[in-house]
Amino acid sequence: MSFSTQDTIVAIATPAGRGGIGVVRLSGPDAHTIARALITHAGPLEPRHATFTRIRSNTRDGFSHASTDAIDQAVVTYFPAPASYTGDDVVELSAHGSPVVLRSIVCGALAHGARAAEPGEFTLRAFMNGRIDLMQAEAVADLIDAATPLQARAAFDQLEGTLTRTIADIDSRLFDLIARLEASVDFPDEGYHFVDATSLAHSIDDLLKQTGALLAGASRGRLIREGLQAAIVGKPNVGKSSLFNALLGTARAIVTPAPGTTRDLVTEVVDIDGLRVTLVDTAGRRQASDPAEIEGVERARQVVSVCDVIIHVIDTDDLPDTSGSQTVLIVRNKCDLAPASPATTNAGAICLSARTGEGLSELRQRLVAALDMEPMRDRPEITNVRHIALVERAHEALERARTAALAEGGAMPEEFVLADLQDARASLEEITGRRAADDLLSHIFSRFCIGK
Image (cartoon, rainbow, N blue to C red; front, side, top):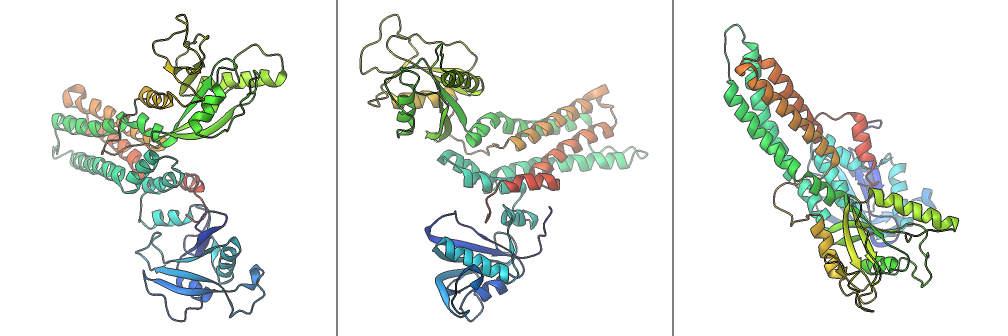
């Protein structure tokens, strides 16, 4: 990383804006000393005890009071190293959530020698100090960004170390296997073989089962973490925007009787049975002459080509278009106005009314069922695309190792198997961060918010 991890950093740890409470966090060797300079409390701060005190004024932030005056009341908590979030000394000052007050606390800390924290630097220090591994650090960001309970649960499971323990178990077995093979390689003249080809292949098979089990749930896990995109399509005036608003529960898209009202893509995120779904309301499919509407129809075509599922809306006098390779849900809207004619009835169609809400629950159920989103199991879920790619790499290396172990009737030199097993272990260590380049760490922690 390009910045020091030995100095004391400070940042506001609560979201921007006003609130009932705001937290300023200090971490580093001088956290306790700097915090003492910011508060009126005379004695040392008792570890892991909340201390009620007042915040001294800070003239650098515009306060004109004397240095002994106070600007706010606060509760201060001191977490000495190593029993803290970052593994360094940490002090959290909880004051009223005024941006002016919180900025004054930060400026006071800076004046006493602290440095403004970079995005994710507190969690980076937790990783660097061995409090968490890289998977758990990424889970912190995922938990903060979670938009649905399912996303939050998946992230929290990883933060608790479920995936860490699974990877550690695979790595431990792999290490034992590598150690025995290296022992065989180290004593070639003596003819020692600490593992025979058959038992080696069986051991690799066990490892392949474990990596295979992780990969089996990878697509579902990634879907939980990243969500999916659903495009609402159909001809003009079939009720696409009305359905969009009904699923959101708010009038987000403009609805008028005139065709061609929606000309641009209207996008919003919604929670559907715990799944994060980005809904896209598109322009109606028709031959348009207006340049703006032509562009809207073209954008609709583009988003349909990359979305995960298509919600094709028809009305009582329309016929569905089911061409294409994506999952398509046919929705017959306006079922409260008139029954569908026999020619337009579709056995798989969902009959609903965006105006009254009838049939919306069935649409939500069908959307989740179409994606095979079964209830979350109590086994570890792999959700991160980086983790998935590295487990795939490890799995492929294990397959090569198994092939090498059985080649030539088991007479292949151990070095060939060993090289593939070491490749597999290197991939696993990259997941946990034991083999993480600085640019990778910079990329991961740059997406964190400042203060975390």
